Image 1: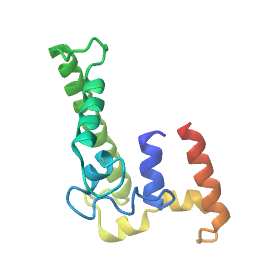
Image 2: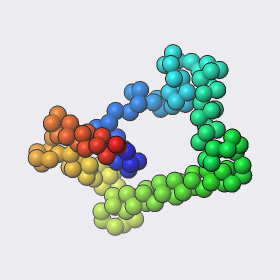
Image 3: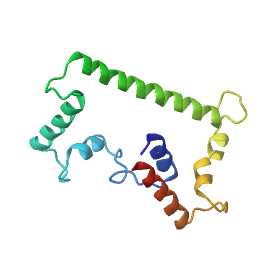
Length: 144
């Protein structure tokens, strides 16, 4: 799924957050990624497996070593994602600033719900189970 579609779905509440709000407790997000058997603890084997996955992601050419070029590539990918996120945030902020005064008031923030309006296919100001199911299906199709 494209990241923007996932973020949009999360904002509307159409896709549940993994394991019921993964960031409620410090370290929970890491725990979810590494604790593959779901027992609430990270074993040495689970940590080894996580490190193997990381190594494979960094060893982009699959030659069994991580070289400086691969690290530079990973660093650049991180920077590119950060720049894209900053651009999206800036664009979103400008759209929220409906009166163009360079500030987003609480009223402007609260009144901007384009994703809700998109999902509310019949325009009645309420999301029915059918409308939610339809948009979830569309999002799932885009993920594949």
